[in-house]
Length: 285
Image (cartoon, rainbow, N blue to C red; front, top):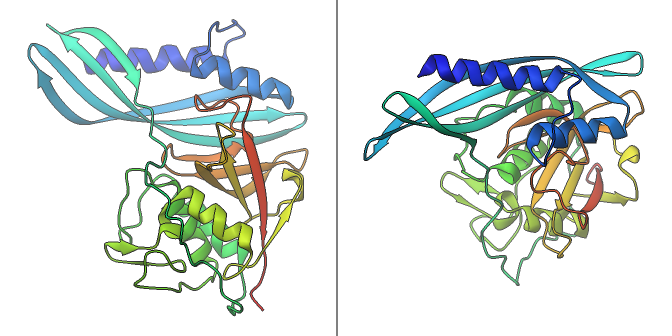
């Protein structure tokens, strides 16, 4: 069975780098189409898989496994590496593969309170954006054991990066107030994508400047994404690098990724109604 999984991985790697057109709306197709828009191609892919769980449903054996993909990207005369983690599941009957699929992560499902108190008139700090980026790079595909581990981890990860950059917590123990985490307790703004967006947009506590284009962002700055365009922001990203055209490459959790192109057009969550918000993180004064 594990040999069959290795063969599946090899076939996917070959599809990423082949000139053959991959039809449909699958992940490989979406990624190739998105890369074309900014003159980038995948020239090599490395894939490593690790089985981490096994269970049975009747006569069906189910293996859960994690795949780390590393893409060597070529853009004009330059190269960069993008990485991501996939959670996948394979089902076998009598030793034969009957189904294999990626497990799509969920989006924030927590109800957003209406009485958030996120603002402060003054919070003093110096934002060290390189420390924030170093933290984002260190923990892009792992969970820091000093923090509670969340299933939907995108905002918790971004909050950790900002805190590593020197922004202090405040507001504990009120979940509706400030931005903080203590053991198994935390504020909505620390863990929920839309609440963190609300905090960043307010520009108090964490001082920000909202800008109109992604290209204006620097390393350590934050993007917020509303996939459906319905006014509720679902995902947060931190800028950790730039491509040849000066456009952001980002890190994120939930679907753990490193140096991914900021538009997320290769995501299954992408819709034509997607809305982006761009926040420069400023020093607190």
